[in-house]
Amino acid sequence: MNSIPKDIIYFVPHYTENGDSVLILFLSGEKKIVPMSIRSFSKKLYSLYAIDCQAIKKLISQRIGQKNLLPIVLPDATFIPVKTRKAVVKTDPIFGYVNMSQIFRIDDKDDHFEMLLRCGAVLSCLGSAKYFKKRITLASVITDYLQGIWSQGALKIKEECELENVFGLE
Image (tube, rainbow, N blue to C red; front, side, top):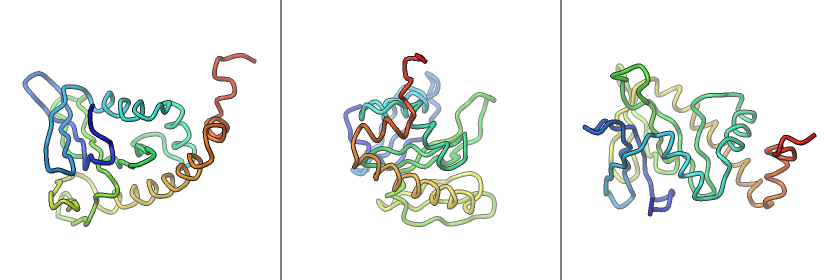
């Protein structure tokens, strides 16, 4: 991945003839399809910053009191999960992620909602706009919290993530 995460507007699961892929929309307006799962893509985002994916997810989960559909919080971008498609097969990924700073407006429709992004693009989403707005609030809270930790340096991050016993020693 050659782009900076803050330049990504959204990334969503996408079907191709070769299987699941990720469709990425960049600030430049360019769209790219990457042949990997959403899960692998999000892990790569964390790895760009040398962030332990499991540790940060545990910290986020504890702070917002939620185990699933966690925001992806990076030093220069926060991505919020949003349901973008129905699964063809039960195990298909249905949630993509949108850059929180790129959301301009959310329009509630009868059975879905549309997200107008700052670049002018529209992302059609499934589910409730009201619930998505709650996700924005939670993501804002955890982003502010983590920005404060990151500004204090690696030792504070280590304390917060409870990594003292990282090797399983007692």
